[in-house]
Structures are given as C-alpha cells and as structure tokens.
Amino acid sequence: MNSPQVPAARHTLDILRLLSTIDVPISAARIHRELGIPRSTTYHLLSEMVEAGFVVHLAGERTYGLGLAAYSMANAYTTQQPLVRLSQKYLEKLASFAGGSGHLSRLSATEIVYLQETRAPRAVSLISQVGVRLPAVGTASGRAMLAHLPETEYRAVYSASDPAEGWGAFQKHLADVRERGFDVEVQEVSRGQASVAVPVLDHLQRPAAALAVTYPVDSLRDGQCAQLREQLRTAALEISARMYGNRGD
Image 1 (tube, rainbow, N blue to C red):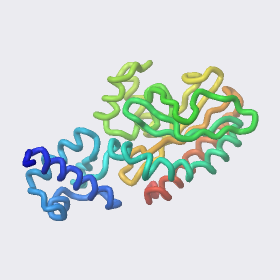
Image 2: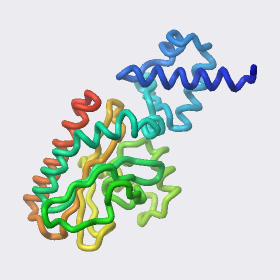
Image 3: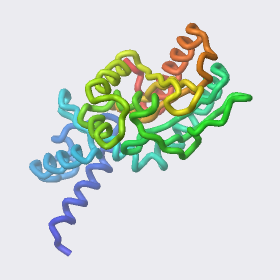
Image 4: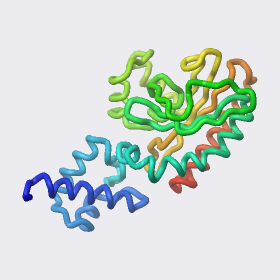
C-alpha cells in the first residue's frame, strides 16, 4: 500500500519514539539528521504534533520535547505507577500531619483523575478516591497544574468547562497560583473540607501530576497551614528530581 499517509504516520511515530528516548528537548535539525526525514516534512509534522499536544515547542531554545498528550497516553506504563509508588510515603506523612487525606492526581483532557489516596486514621472518606474524575478548573489540584501550561492550553480547558470564574478572573487566579506555587480550595469539592495542592513538574517544567492534602475546614492553625504548604512543595520537588532529574532551579 503506497498511500501518502503511511510514511507520514511512520515518521510521526519515529519522532515520538526519538523524543521518548532522550531526556532533554532537542532541535528540529537533530530530528531531521537522526531520522533522515526531509527537513520540510520534519517541521510540518512537528507543527501538527504541537497543535495536537503530543509535542511541546520551547521557542526560546528552538527545541522540542514530548507534550502532555504523549505523556497521558504513556502514563499507565511508564509514568503513572512509578509516580504512585514514589508518592506514597510523602502522602502518608502529609495526610498524618493534616489529619486528613493525601492525593495524587494528573490532568486528563479537561479533568483531573485521582491516582492515589491516603487517609490518616479517622479521616473522613471523600469523593476524591482513586479513579474518580473531576473538572480541572474546579479543583485546587487541577488549577495547580493548569497554571503551568501555556495559555493556549489552559484556555482550551477553560472554554470546554463550566468555570465559576470569568476568564479574566481565572487568568489572574492561575497567575497567582504560578507565582506562589500552590492553590487552595475551601468547600469547593467536599462540604466542610479544605484542600491545598502543588504541581509536580517534569523536565520540561510541565505538570506531570499534583500533590494535594484535604483536611477539615478550620482544623489547622495559620502556622500549620504554612507548614503543610512547605511540606507539599518539598515533596513535589523531591519527586520531580527523582522522576525527571528536575532540580527546580
């Protein structure tokens, strides 16, 4: 079969395979050289893959790396389970400190999906159990991750959702989250419960997951809330360093 779509599909898969075997983003010129794909075809395919979310273009460095869509497809095999295993001890410690529940989640299109839940003794059972999906824009975990995506991507998630905030307020909210490094929610998901969440960033500084702790409203003093946020940030940095070699510089 000599359909023109076959070489394009093969080249696309070759590019994804190459990007998945290299730990850092690489240039289009290198992709062209290593795979022997015509230069114009290389740029055309990369453009389409960026548009679809399978590849991310770092314009300042003129390089390309795997995008969120590629990570999402590969998550169950190469990322999800290692993240769950690595996060377990952190979630147990955080849940115990707050007297609540610790969660690991990731983005899936316009939603977050919970990968892990750990409850402290006597902590209440929540909706956010493993496998549950919630709108990303309506959770601290979702917003903590969306804040580290390009505007075109989080705008698409916002447009496909039913957000409580207007676009301008939502943009500012994400800017604040990006600046302070965490997001909070109070009784947005579960009555009587508050949550704080931080992103786990990969080697491209994109959100691979989010760590969150949910606890009864007003059960923690201000100083304890600050301690919890710091412990969450430290945990996320350590997981990011071990999973992706990202030192958070």
